[in-house]
Length: 131
Image 1: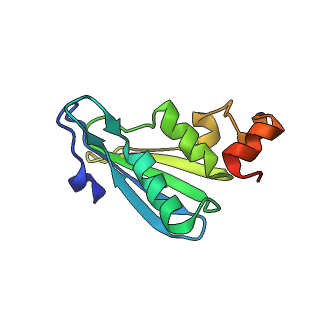
Image 2 (image 1 turned 45 degrees about the vertical axis):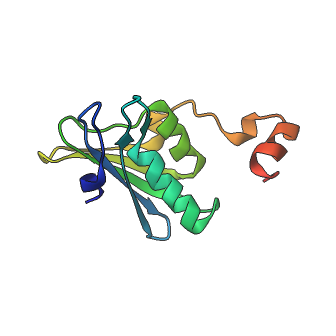
């Protein structure tokens, strides 16, 4: 799994993420921390891999994390990144090495999501190319 690529000298919390697109493609990420306590989260890295490979029109069907210890639910920033590329049916699954599993709708994780349409028209053109 991508978890073997996790680098977590600060927290010791290894986590990996798999993004499954609506077309069935899979993209992976693992958390990467630095001694300066700066981290790149597994979900964000998997989403970045998806967008790099498929472009910003790609859509997420599911995000799954696999963690040592407690289930790895995404932080607010990762939830927003997921929201940027989701569909109304996108869900999130948290797995642990011990076998625990929980699946929830992304809408339940981020019930009052910020969407690009919340921006004023002029700003939206700058942020999203006017789409």
